[in-house]
Length: 160
Image 1 (cartoon, rainbow, N blue to C red):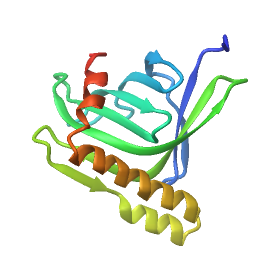
Image 2 (image 1 turned 30 degrees about the vertical axis):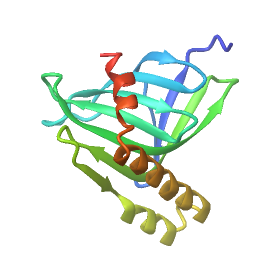
Image 3 (image 1 turned 45 degrees about the vertical axis):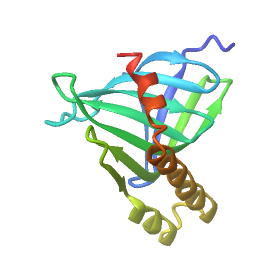
Image 4 (image 1 turned 120 degrees about the vertical axis):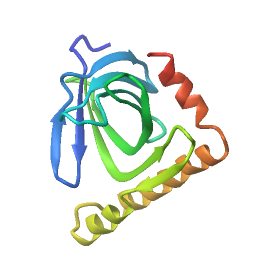
């Protein structure tokens, strides 16, 4: 096991940025998952903090988004891929653009698919990564529509 403190980075394609998540508190880590608690990077009226579950083998980051009173706003699901550098004990989580929101009333909304098209047009993303993002988004939607999203919610809720 690497003795260096784990570092998590968020890589976005649009806009192009790499951010060290230095203030995220790691609550759990194993070979398949990482759970973090975090405060919003930029002050917002609607979102104050959250708990995120990185599913390393599934390509999802499931976040419970909380308001200033620590009440659920919604579940935000990023489609991601990750790179791990064992020598530096760092993870870079790349946002593959497609996102899914699950509201408290179970309304589901898919976001940012147009960004995949934009990224393809501008050669920011490869066809293979775009296809992976769409396939993972579809897989996540199947999980939600089949009533199996609760398993992720229970994992996150255990760290509240």
